[in-house]
Image (cartoon, rainbow, N blue to C red; front, side, top):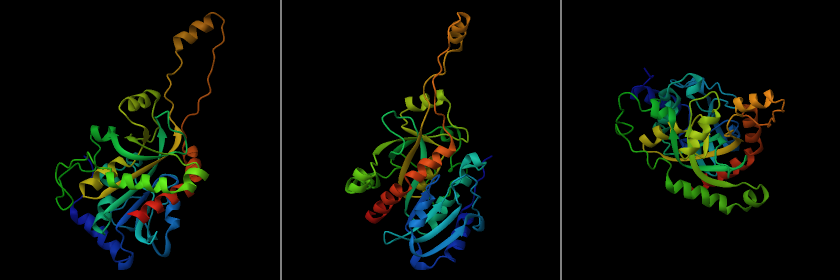
Length: 309
């Protein structure tokens, strides 16, 4: 049975936070910083309030590498924001309700717009490592199979029992993000940052996808794949929040078929050499490396978006 919460649990966490954050820093925008992208929080200027996750009632501990595990309140582009330096993942052993617990707490402290960032593997062969993708939809394989942050009794204070998520990725914010990129000649011409719009495939993890899984996800219309974001988006949409999600492409998924063992055995039997092809498999070090390489660009893009909201 998935871990679920009563409304009081979210309310207690929100009240605990608000007692520690001055009123002028109460945010309307929440930014979720994905793997290696926690530097966004460093862009917050002026007065800051930092709260480690483990101190907040109901919050889990972030164990993923590249996730600091801290709420940072302050001002970004002259707007009060809160940054989640790291998120919770189901692969860490948390239920979808636990992993998305902070989203509802953010709603209760006044956040009405969520900007989620993540590092993702690339399924669309027209994309390249280092590109950024505005998410317009997702395919939630674990969600279809029963990992959904809304499982359990509904909490009407947040939203209805059966919420539609066809427009979970707010069209207005997607257009605004595209305008921000188009307006930034430095990002386009100097930094060569390429922006796409595409569909995110959520897998549970922590193992990366198999070749066949990558091909299956691509056949379902997914452009990028990762281990987060979709559960948060569903819960945010249920709570009536506007959502923008950005994926940084950090590695190319391996989609080619495995060499045929029968054909290879035939070649060996005939005394012929087996041709081997070097392939780059996904690894978290590469994810963090590309995230660091694009950190400044992601920060500039998100700051520009926040300024336009």
